[in-house]
Length: 139
Image 1 (cartoon, rainbow, N blue to C red):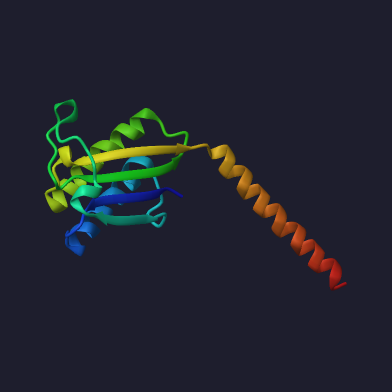
Image 2 (cartoon, rainbow, N blue to C red):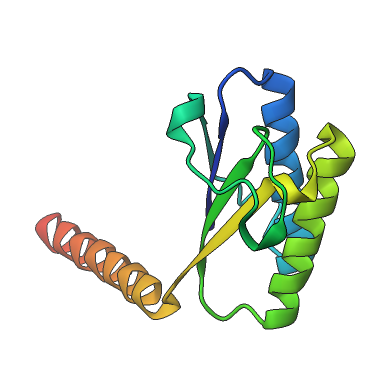
């Protein structure tokens, strides 16, 4: 279950924010085989002084239309998948909103799948134990 946070300057239209979110999600579906219904996104708008970035870091000219996208994903994604994700994330929002690729900053947070797996097993064990106790109590 990837969690996506999209941060941008305040004052954008709801349609613009929705199109950015749609493009990001579609890129994840296409490039990383994320299920289409596995969509969890948070969009936040900030005042001009609350989004801090260098306007020409690494000689990339950024504007005040910058969009930060932060994704929490489980580890195990192949480098080719990540490259395809970045490529589609630059293409899709640009196509639907006119967002320049230079104004898109993407940050991936890779989380250990082992911990997620342990949590899922623990939840199953709790449910199983609870069901067994209920069954014994009703006998």
